[in-house]
Image (cartoon, rainbow, N blue to C red; front, side, top):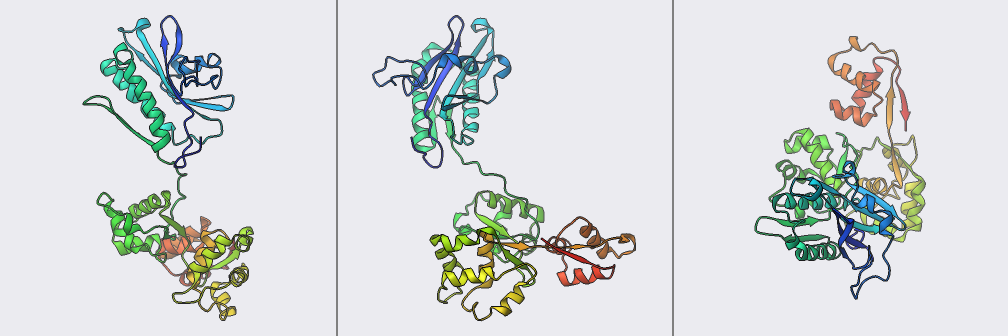
Length: 400
């Protein structure tokens, strides 16, 4: 089956329990015959794998119960959360069950892990409340529930099934993104979507305040000041937006910055879609789009040791009709150029003899921080920071 909504398809879903005399049994499976042989007319000709070879992991020892388990067998991966309930009302004083999801062995199942865990805990609560699983009266209803979970998650990525007046199964698949990088005060967020269009009444108050100041120019620190919000909360809000792909962060744009090409610069010439996107993005309002070859030549003219100001003076005629800030931002976002950061290095400095502002500056210098980080932290221009450092000795500038 093909992926739906970016999530891998469930190949099979089955419910198993431990019988006091017969051992591990599969009570319900969908599709029929996918796990154990079935007499159903629509059943598989043969199961996907040999169930007997893994049944001790479907209903495992108590030590492995109430944990998320993943088993790989042949070309398939089985994800489950076996449950062990103690109680004198059960044979052998315990009841064990498991809902198992089967996927292809190479499927990315990260989005299903919380769903499998939630489903097992939900049925554990239902069993403890009214013997929902162990009661023979519930068997037909449970079969239809298993069928619906399988169909709904595969077709709609969500499932809602009323159980009774007080309980229901309500599960939904959500994509799991990698955690965003740590946001620094000097980072500049650039919106990737129309933030005001996706706002609603449930948004965090801090988030509502900062959105209007996310313009691709203001740094995180500046946004917090303009919105009159706590810096820590502002940074967390921007991290949240970045996690969901609503913003991208770049360094503060200054004409004193230096940039150089990455090994991916050739993509601008090879990828037609990237070239078209670059032409549209970097053009000044009302200006004619520039040829991709011209844009590539301008990017290649950026190099270490040359500031944007120097680069602009050298290429002033070729840069007519191009928004320089957007030109640099596009290159950074697409990974075809990188920022060359400048790290000031001082040796044998007597911090105790410095004034309070310079003490903070010198301590930050010792922590191997670049100028953007230092200047944003103590909120002074780079020129002033450089002059203050030079008063305490020779400054070595390391570019990287």
